[in-house]
Image (cartoon, rainbow, N blue to C red; front, top):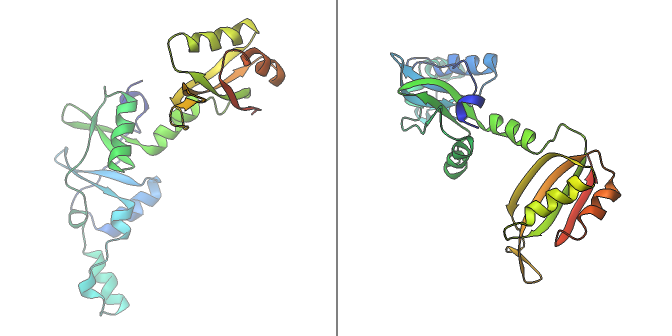
Amino acid sequence: MLVGERMSRPVISITKEMPIHDALALFKKEKIRRAPVLKDGKLIGIISDKDLLNASPSQITSLSVWEMNYMLSKITVREVMTRKVLTVQVDTPIEEAARLMADNKIGGMPVMKADKVVGVITETDLFKIFLELMGARTKGIRVTALAEDHPGQLAKITKAIADAGGNFISFGQFASVANGSSAGVKTVVVTFKVAEMKLDSVKKALAKVVVKLVDVREC
């Protein structure tokens, strides 16, 4: 899956000359939390709702409310935007975009096609993908188990479920939270959801092919 398949579009962009009050009103109307700043179609920065809300010049704190509001109306996006912008291309793998956002503690990035902004990928877009990957909107038996970390183990799990008549809705593998081992055996965490099976049947099918059943539930 590539960023271009899941990015938010069309792009809602703003100019550096826009007053922050107008930018906040636009954010509220369009229900967005960040927007690229463009000049002549070129990306020159990015602005978030936090940037806008935190814009309050200390040099005018002694003015009256009316004077303060007037001065605030003169502050533009240019004064509070971030100029060094992390971006991704439309053909960037979605997990690479997620890694960049997590490592840099940001909630979204402009998506480029060559040097043109064509979309924005956000944490909300990634959450929606996570829901799909985990089958969160489909009923089934959800399993979390520890499996031995060596070739062939995942195949044993999938075969055990298939032989019992189950159908996989989702399947994910994660690093073990217990320092990567269980009772001296190197393990990984597998979390998956299956349909067309009863809870007890799932437990029975997996009993001999996993190290430990951590959690099994209907959801």
